[in-house]
Image 1 (spheres, rainbow, N blue to C red):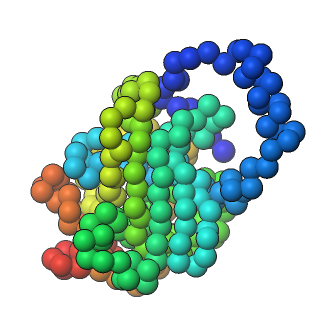
Image 2 (image 1 turned 135 degrees about the vertical axis):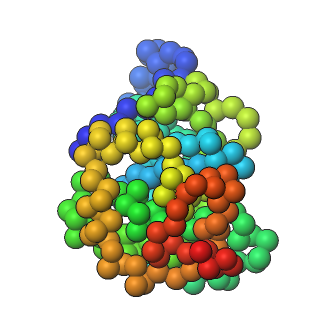
Length: 236
């Protein structure tokens, strides 16, 4: 699997005997049970809902709680030095339908990410990746980023988590994600977007119209829809 290092290294020292002793002690004596099971790994892109020009590559490590709910911790890379940048909760279409109307505005749709090939599961054989993507069809995610560490293609961002958490969204049309951001990830991780779209084309027939697909249309007026990623209210 190709390495994706973090764009920034936070300030501070990590060479003290106290730090080394704490690390050794925790490994020997403490139980990290809540962290077990976060072993589903997917990589995608997130724009900020209120400022979609702010875009990041996000590495998701997820635990499937049940058939309708996943919990993910988000990092800016996949190395031991990766920075924790946020969290994402994923619910099925069925659970999304139980949410109050006011709550639904926090949850972004996933069909474009799946059908457009931008969401990938590095290291999985194609059939296994396609099965994972089929499970994510028609689902929704609620994502908060607490740290904008920047992008590997343009340079580092904040060296520490600053300000308020940002509610993130999904790209839902071709032409919304910065092509340079996509290309940098795809080249580094050997992603053939056209091949992935073709492989997942059979999933289009499973796609249902979703809320929030058209939310970024005004910010990206030249973007174009793809089959299967349709806004429930506009039909486009």
